[in-house]
Structure formats: structure tokens, C-alpha cells
Length: 136
Ligand code: B12
Image (cartoon, rainbow, N blue to C red; front, side, top):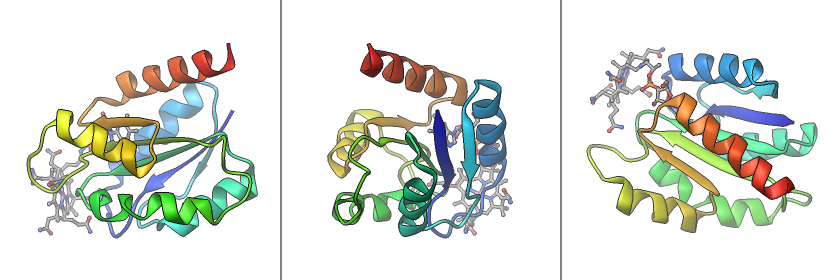
């Protein structure tokens, strides 16, 4: 399975991105890592070019909240992304916030899996369970 990953917007926190890359590879995914400072168009372009199954976005400084609102409208302009699994995680707001508010909001933005302040291994277990269920 192919995964495009990276850190959205002007966010330069790189450590989690490296760990995500390594962890996905260790689980057998083929990874296309766009790194930090990646914009939504770049994510979607890469998904089309690679034929990705999963788009896994990180946000650590919380600015995903601003980008999230643009996801649905932008994705609709691309062909062949209807089956793309959309996942996001890290710190999904600036400042504090609780998952009960944040998760439904991001689902409305168009994400299938939303991991606010959830550790990476738990998040990737959730991704694998989601893929397994979808393929069964
Ligand atoms: C190191 C660091 C920096 C370094 C980054 C260096 C670098 N090149 O990476 C520097 C000093 C440059 C920096 C700058 C800033 N930072 Co900073 N930084 C940190 C710090 C101390 C550690 C981050 C880190 O590397 N952790 C180690 C990794 C492994 O952990 P992690 O990032 O939490 O990632 C884990 C999970 O989040 C999860 N995860 C991440 N993504 C995803 C995705 C999915 C799908 C899943 C399932 C899981 C997942 O998996 C990872 C492993 O478990 C944190 C505070 C902290 N203690 O976490 C603040 C922190 C992230 N920074 C913060 C802020 C505000 C900033 C600045 C805006 C500060 C400023 N005023 O300038 C700037 C932003 C710059 C920018 N353009 O993005 C805030 C963000 C708060 C928010 N969201 O509201 C934090 C939380 C500090 C705080 N408590 O306020 N920062």
C-alpha cells in the first residue's frame, strides 16, 4: 500500500515526520514523504502521481485547523482521489482543545481518521484496522 505523508503548511516540526516515515516502512507501506512545509495542493498532486492509497498528514503547530476547511473543496477538483484514505494527526488545534470537539470537526473537513494527540503506534494500528475492514 502506498502512503503519501508530510507536515501541512508552514510547520517545520520534523521529528514526528521522520518517525512516521520509519514506522510506516517498518509496517510494510511504500512511503512518499514530502517532509515539512507542505501545502494541500502538493499533497493531492503527489497522491495522484503516485496512485497513493493513503494520505497521512501531520500538524504539530496546530495550523491544520486553518487548512482543514479547504480540504473538501480542493480534493473535489482532483480526479481519481475518491478512494483515498485521509488521515490526520498531531496537535490539531492551536492551544488546548479536546478530542470530542476536534475529531468530528475534522471528519466534516473530509478526514476518515483523526488522531488528536494520539501516539503514533496507536494511530497506525487504527489505520491498519481501517484498511482491513474496508478490504473485507
Ligand atoms: C522541538 C520543538 C520545536 C523546534 C522544531 C525543530 C524541528 N526542526 O523539528 C522549534 C524550536 C524550531 C519549534 C518551533 C516552533 N514551535 Co515547537 N515544539 C517543539 C517541541 C518541544 C517538541 C516537538 C517534537 O519534536 N517532539 C518529538 C516528536 C516525536 O513528538 P511529537 O511532535 O509530539 O509527535 C508525536 C505525536 O504528535 C504523533 N503524531 C504526529 N503527527 C502525527 C500524525 C498521525 C496521523 C498520528 C497518528 C500521530 C502523529 O506521533 C509522534 C510520535 O508519537 C514541542 C513541545 C513538545 N514537548 O512536544 C513544541 C511545540 C510542538 N511547538 C509549538 C509551537 C507553538 C512552536 C512555534 C510556533 C513557536 C514560536 N512561537 O515560534 C514554532 C513554530 C515554527 C513552525 N513554523 O512550525 C507548540 C505547538 C502548540 C499548539 N499546537 O498549539 C508545542 C506543542 C509547544 C507548546 N506546548 O506550546 N518547535
